[in-house]
Length: 196
Image (tube, rainbow, N blue to C red; front, side, top):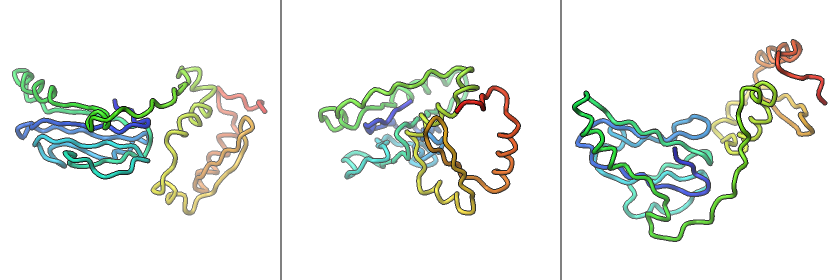
């Protein structure tokens, strides 16, 4: 897993000798914002830059392509083709050639200042039942809606309410709003609707 806060990383891949491999670059919305691998970038050795949403700059020398994440946190999922048990040493050789390093290390520059520590709430089954929206609110600060999502709101109703003293807006179609209102009126289990 690769976190982008606030650094960018260089992903280096070896020549896989035409073996299938893929590296899916996935943002916090579970959107695949890029792929590295046989079907997209080929099987020759190369270096690719996975950058955060606010990264701007010239493509550094030696970098084949820049992939900009749409959120601050991203995941790089590596897969390498395995034909059978006897093929495992060949797979391990390819995997040993994968390398991930901060852009600053690749450029032989000082590391950027450390990002502020994030106090992630502990996720428990009870928290999901009683404080789901608080955790969702916490998580969404790192995954703001982009223009591609805002265009989905056309023809939707925006419902506004207050939760723990903060304004909350939810956009949904009219039929979804009717269903949501019915759900709220039923007093779903595990919720305390008497809180003000």
